[in-house]
Length: 461
Image 1 (cartoon, helix red, strand yellow):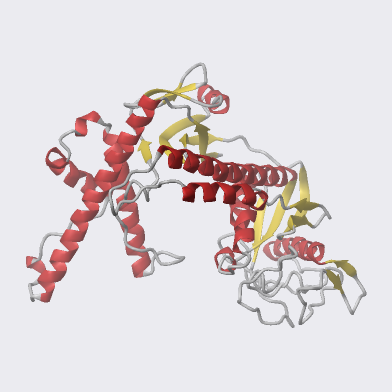
Image 2: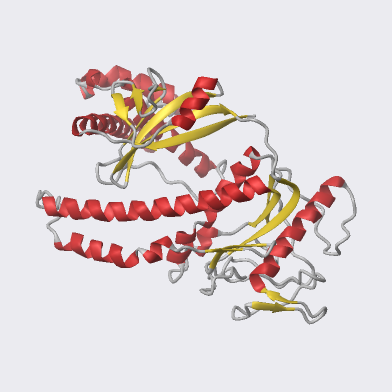
């Protein structure tokens, strides 16, 4: 199976190398801003000419938004705009033009309704303080050194890695991977290089081929599995809040930059800001490592995984619990499961956000009309089942997978849960509400006890 995969490594750059990389990032920013100003000028000129009644055929010629058109316009004007362009790789300027072409394309498709999701705004100018330094190389000498501790990039030369690149080097030596591009980026004060590769992955199968597991997400427990296992929520951000607040107060007491009066930041402010960035980076790394460990274990062990289709963006609008929800990383967990199940030969089923997993009895299938947030134990009045609320929801999600399998095979579902037979063609599940389910409350709030609830997840469960 061929797939596109990224390998990301931290870099240990010298001061000279860091200045060179920052120069390339500045060149990308210059090309982006120049092309954006050119596009805005042409659009404004055409709008003004239309207001004067100029015919369409006599308007100022349109500047195409594709990458080849922007690159052609840049090459015609680069001697005047940037006489020093030979000092940097052509890929640096191509990075900025490509970012603008993608932004304009997304804005145009969002405006016309061809792009799904939230509306995309018109691209803005990039500044040193607001943009992340980044440069992408797609051509030239890009390879890993035989010692696996250094990489070679065009015009940047030989860069030292903070860790060994043996996993990527083994695939390159075996011929099962091919480097498509390399991106050097600074995040949280640390430079990284990311290799986008075309990888040939061997066919794999889960260790338990017939197993089905439902995953109920929450705040007290990050995940509750239908097998009864409870994954604790580490809350890395909450654990580091006290130290991060102390560091933030230290930064605020230092003399920082002020563009209004032309004041530069003091050395003490820069050191304090660097300590604060390291603290944020550590929290992000801990969260990323925990999610990778959990999702890799689930994808390698189980053949079918059922998760909830959560409205994370709507949940983050709750100002009281937005920090806890963001710290859990629900969307990132689902993204990891999406591609890891494909790599390991399993399948991922996403339940519709209106599916009443918490309100449904996992024993007899009875759907309660109401379930208070304070009820952490589910009690069925029909069959007398008493079960933890989150475990009951996880078992309902696991039962949903069997209904989907029966629906695709054409057999009649024998569990009496009456799932809707119509499934979307994309391979993911959109389950209708069961008869008797109460309409959902779309307030988007979450239970602080940790179980995802109907108000918490903006759907009746």
